[in-house]
Length: 336
Image (tube, rainbow, N blue to C red; front, side, top):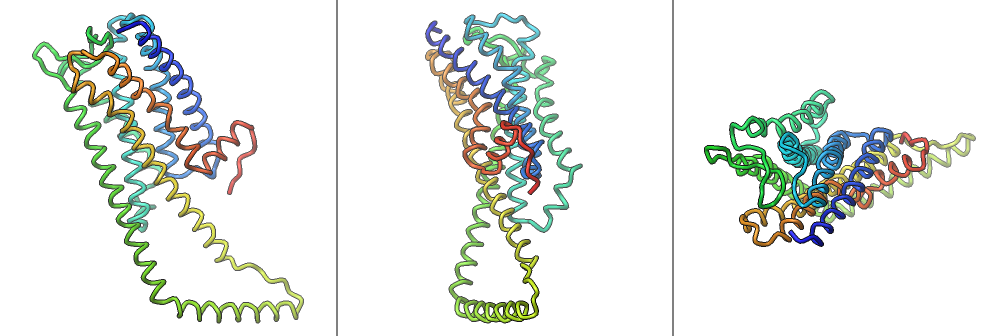
């Protein structure tokens, strides 16, 4: 690895680390402190931010050190712990994104069972499963039973290596922790867009078929309301806005926000795949490290996934922007 390449990689890694720590910490505080954004999806997103925060705190400092010194200098114990934390946090992130996607699908397609499934106990169990499963899969490698964690001398970094029997868990971990969650996410979003498409088609056909009937009913309703207001004014009473109207307005706002969250989670997944694919392709296509620059760029893209989510939250969700503003300006959070 050339010195300019390592210097560039070290600078980018430190920058990503700082942005990731601040962005994810701000998101955790904002989602906990502001009731308006505190929902089921927020519980999973908080856990996702914790995973990214841990990645930036415990993984990226060693990665930047590795680029600065050109090799691993922190001993055998940390050389085993480093890839364990790196792969574990990546697995947790993708599993949590899959969980949020399933949550979005059930919210949109099976709303009648949503509240029965997403109770506090079950939400906690789902989040705990993501963490335990992701790190638990690596215990055989940590114990040296199925591959080993060690120093790859070609890359100068610690990763999963073949054990004395020539076995490695890399392929299995890739299939279980990456491909399967990706398939679940893609299937869920395909079903979500199918449900939404069918709903919009039904609404459109109903509107075309029944437009005259709705217009007549609306006119009658408007006349009745006008007569009622005249009578109320005549007896000196003040008309009150119907409660159902405000409730419908709140329900509409809630549904719009749920759909915004659904699109935001899709953006998070796509950004994760875009950040993860380069290093995956390079590892497969250049096993003998003939092009070290591509490996370094692949790692930087992978690290970028730990700091990009808060940027997506800011761009795509107004309520999250308001929550950030509340924390930064130290305002009292709004309840509604």
